[in-house]
Image (cartoon, rainbow, N blue to C red; front, top):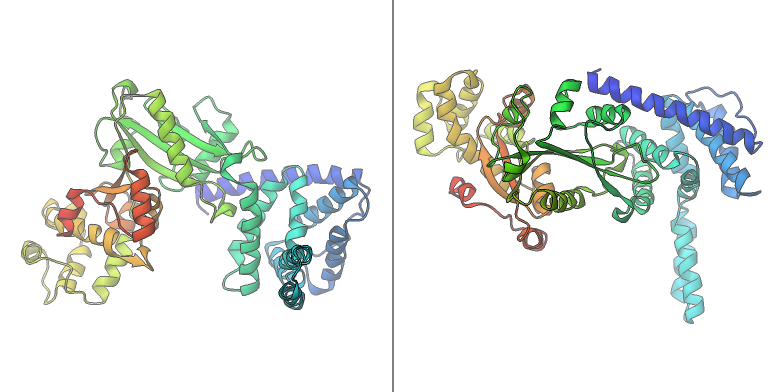
Length: 472
């Protein structure tokens, strides 16, 4: 287990312990029945008791205190299960407490036969009720419990880890995502700038949740919160101590072209008043259970507004982004024997460093060598790989959208592909993802909406002249 995974696991365990304590008190206050001894793996013989508890929650007998106590009792039951038991719990929810096809068809028939407005409205309500599975009505009850929203977010995280291709579990995931989408509407979220003075528990979470450039130490994190840096996160009022998504910004002069230089802990802090460029170098979703809910576009726009108000000298807003799928895509093209990978000039320049009869073989041979440690080979590879990276970002598709997930995110938000940077990430991960190539996506406030509309409506990718030249 990596250091980040260990830290994240410790954070989760602390949260679970807090939930158990809070919900134990709720269960006691509502005089709910204590859970019967249960094997953590939830074998079939123990599932009848669980079904009884779920049925009791859905029946909703008694007052609000009793309802909260039953939900807390069920939640504590779930928290006591092993990974195997939780998987079986999800299967039980999806299979026994999903939608009833017969009930849905009957509701549709009633709606088809309704003619008066009152009858139509009544039939529509009945159909809506039929389309809402009992399992979602059950899970909705947790929103009234302390930390219940966070519980549902983590529950969806665990569901996504085990659901695989199972249709019913995938349907449950979709339904849970829709439930959470209602609670995490952008209007509920608040933007906060985070500094080194933030609580240590929050700083620990930011380090654990960082998904783009690993935080190596407290000193590394402090460097990212220095005077020439900005750290922003979205929070939800029901999860005040849990960041949902956060962005890290460097205030510099000119477009940044190397992530190691940008994160160098030994470099002196720049004067933010002299900066003309804001570089968004990391955007991380902190809650895996909120996958599919889009906060990134709103986060970037809000941060742009905040930075513009604070520092009017900023004229350029750009990212320094990874290209996570580039190497895998190029290796597939090489394996397929693509003979359009190299120009004649590039082939001639690479010839001294590898012998092969085809373009694909030549490129495979050179890339298999320790080329990054040889300035001659690296220099010969630079232009071909930059051209191929431009081709990957602009022309490689997944359906109608770019194949690269980071490109999809920024282009959909209204950015343009501004510049490609050679050996901008020389770390092991950077070389593994993209042979070290990184890209600047630039956000021009006056062009964001037009770029977004062109991308969504026509599939047109806003591209700077320098990148177009690489494509040509």
